[in-house]
Length: 83
Image (cartoon, rainbow, N blue to C red; front, side, top):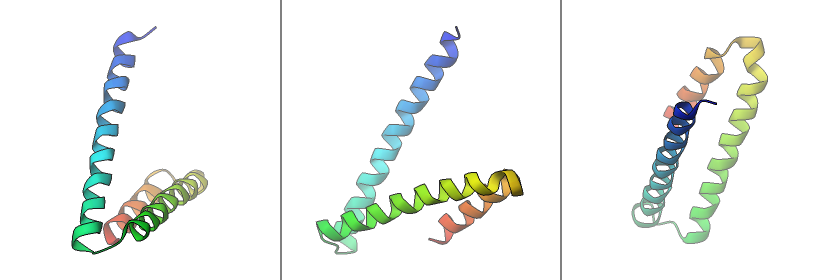
């Protein structure tokens, strides 16, 4: 029923996906060349990062109703900045 909104959402998801893929590509290059990680170690680092992100989303979802929406997002942002 809302074609314009759907189109904006589709384009936004496409741009987000491109940005996400480029971020993984650059991170992989940094891990291989500058950090000297092998393929297996780099895969493990990416797996841990993805797992931590998923756990963070679950924790933020669980704490959101108790602490409000801003607190879990702010704490996650500070944690990511520290990493």
